[in-house]
Image 1 (cartoon, rainbow, N blue to C red):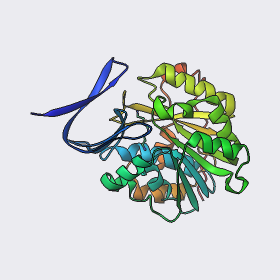
Image 2: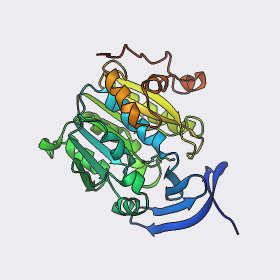
Image 3: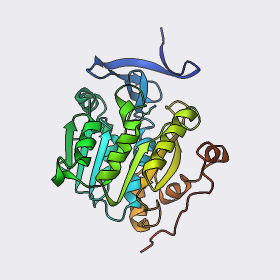
Image 4: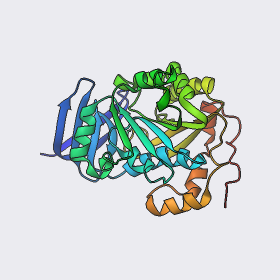
Length: 298
Ligand code: SPD
């Protein structure tokens, strides 16, 4: 008999996958962890029944959360990733030659272990010498760094919030206090990007995220891609900075050469991702299209 799983959203709609095999199942101190092998999408990681990543479409999410900010920054050296225990964001960040250190702060060590074993194409760079893995609560780490507890470890050029949805252990990563603390640990031209949910399926949630971000960061610009396996498929990230726009410092030759090693990202996608449809501008009270300054070409 065929086995199907369905991720239901708000008991209103769902996305179903035909499963060949359960590869891993555990209940950690934080959440239920499942790694399944499915038809079409391949191996997939679910946390508390919510889809986190699949072998077939993970490149879209991981390239978009990484390359947009890293190419917007003139010289990113130190990167902090909160969440992201599957390792996909680490893999993409390491494609940038300027990056000297990547701190990965994942609350759940079992997620890291399971992904290393069962999702090697995603987690394969977690052992890279530039990567410093901390198994601890990212909210607490950022609060400690912001309070000056480890002065030699901050600031960061890039902070990426590669979180779960704002339920369970990920909830505290969507608060004003957390965003304020991230702001404090960014360098003067630092950039934060957080995954900001589906502006199609999760509109009240998305409005709240952007209302909070706009209270903290001078520049907040949503950008968009389609993630076929997430609820609503239409997904967003928030580009947040102290003023640096997403294209003003962009090194076009570097973006083009990086594109030889990506499956989704390229310089045209970088610019187009910030174009918002009218319903989304209205949802987020964005009056004008984001400014896409001339990119650096030499
Ligand atoms: N609804 C799914 C949101 C998950 C976003 N994070 C995915 C983590 C992949 N590294």
